[in-house]
Image (cartoon, rainbow, N blue to C red; front, side, top):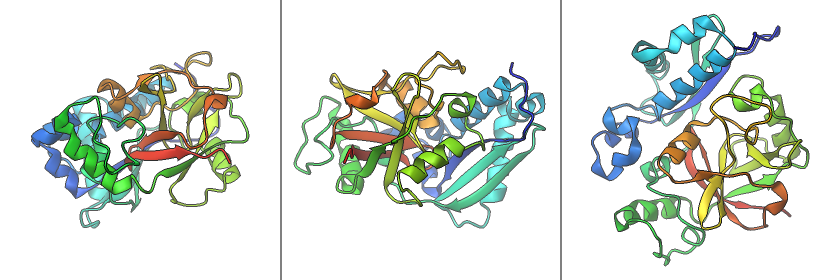
Length: 295
């Protein structure tokens, strides 16, 4: 247990609200979806968001916050807060920013989100480089049953990849880069250096100041193609200064690892190549196709 910092901050997690998610429940084409497949909910991977909040509250020893989100009651409580927050949103899609305070208070702020196909929220696999850029490419090692969903994914984003740059400065790992909190200065600074001012299709990757490895994206998990598989920077279950890459304990990251869409592996920033394909993911936008820009 870690003693609370003297200056106030909150834990938070950003959840996608989308009425289309209700159609995932019982849909055999999306049986790999997990929580959203087993129950009808308009909230994306809400169970994983709760788990992340709980791990963070446990790290800082916030007993009231732990109690607020623990167990089935805690998950139900989160769902009720979200339902109240989106009651006038007409089905979304929306970004719901859940906050959890040291005293156990749960808040929610709602803003707009972009449309994303279900294939982009629950991809059966992350296609190897070449598939997304070539509409005639059907060559893959995965199941043929997955091809229709992947073609939907390609149609939605294959021609408009995210531009992914590398931060010109380096960032120190800390509990605030492992757990998601309202202390976002390091991410805001990286985005400012990269010239990202809004919701455009751009992302910047943070570099660990001690090891030179990629930590994370400023608002997303990143996946690189290495040795015939997708890899993502390692993150331990609990924060440790000497463990992992120093990046965030992400919800969509966990989902991808549990379904073997990727494995953990350190990636040095100086190993990246201009134009190489990558994937990004977060709890609002799902999985996003990108390309590295080093120019």
